[in-house]
Length: 77
Image (cartoon, rainbow, N blue to C red; front, side):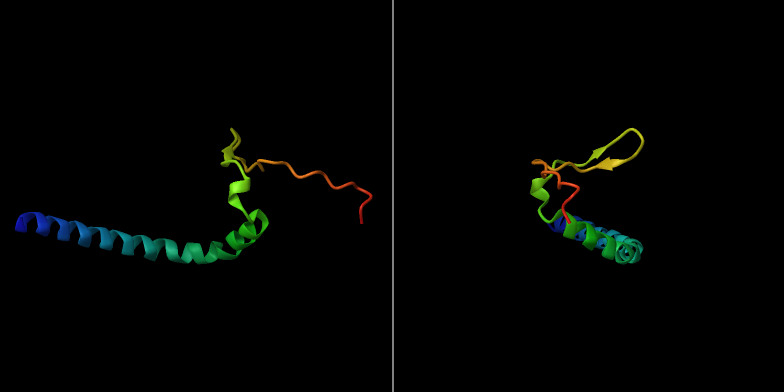
């Protein structure tokens, strides 16, 4: 039983070291993306109103609304 507990402890320590490395690498990039992601979230509002993203052959990503919004007439101010 002691051997099993030691293995779990080692696994936990290794996972913590790995996560610390990821945070060190990704942290600055996430801070840089923060304002963009906030703007995106403001436009999306409710993710359940959209289908999962589709990646086209050319690399474009499309996020389709489940229920389309009626188009706004051009003569509307």
